[in-house]
Length: 336
Image (tube, rainbow, N blue to C red; front, side, top):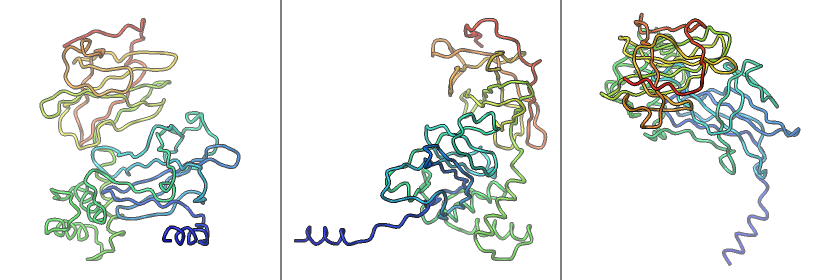
């Protein structure tokens, strides 16, 4: 009897109304999201960016029919306020995105339009209507306070733990910030987050290692550093002609990192005048240790030390003269 009554109730309920997707941010980062969908012309449309503060839910994208089986495509990144680089949430489907607000449809040649590529996740079922971004600490309802703590720390204030709980240290840091910025003593949380983000961007947007491509073609850059007494090399950051990438996103005090680069495309070339040998791979890689690269399935190349940092930033501008042309495709077998 219960099953029959439930079936009757379902039959007489009206269909769920079509609506846009909810993007809910339960992380400690301010995020910018982009959404993609299939149009009536069977093309993929993509648009961004929708800004979502920690602890917020925001509607974005096209109107979604709850009964449709068409997927929604999703990618998100943290804003430039944070030390440690941009965090990303996405998947394996490469689609075109713009650096600033954008809307494209049916575009596959991203580079010709000055667009980048990012990996989108494919959302199906109920996830099309509500997407929740999380991070390992799973802040949940405490995401807003955790976001304030992270911004305070990255703006240079004394915050030791990001836990979503406003203790005395967090309270003192907020008081010091609002006084320094001339804000009301107790600003609304969204206003406080926006002001903290602006302060953190001023402090951090240029900090770290910035590599620029001043050749006429594409290049790929790899990095090597010692972390916790272990050498690690990783790559690649791929730069079009005239493009730049922040390869290290933190305030640098020493020139304690090394970089390697290759020209790609029709004219290949390797970085010259490297002084220290590290492991690398032609595809995306993270390699621990410097010894026995070949025995571990890697090639080896000589990396160049970064310039001495100035005000926390080290800059590298690579020109054609920094590369020697590759005469053969055999891996370079240079070991320390």
